Image (cartoon, rainbow, N blue to C red):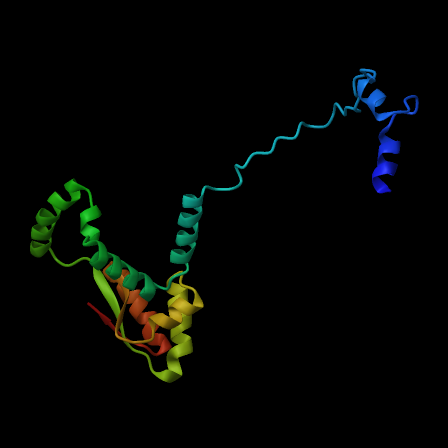
Length: 181
């Protein structure tokens, strides 16, 4: 019954048989849609979707940027072992060639770069030491806490004597045991 009803609805009113309906010509009138001249044409591109490889790189970059300093060091060591490369292999050739000459000159000259090493932090001075570490560096709370765990660790590397002495003074004021190497 539904098929009879639909054929009756689709049939033009002036024609009575389905054979006559197929031979009838419908008037050719252009369809007119209202056009809004102020509206911008719709242009949709997939430019906001990065390719799959770029998405992986972005995800990997986000994961690496969230690593702690200790985890980043482990990652570097792992990649050096896995790929058989070292950080020195990425240095420009001129810098590698100049390195032996610089080392020979440094042996003659007085030491100008120092490392600040945190040797020990008593349990009653941990919070104060974390605050000083955060003030001297741009580390987050978690990274500063991890830095003072598992001592001794290098706090600052290759800094001037004045910077090393200032860091030592502030850290010892907080209760930490510091050495300048």
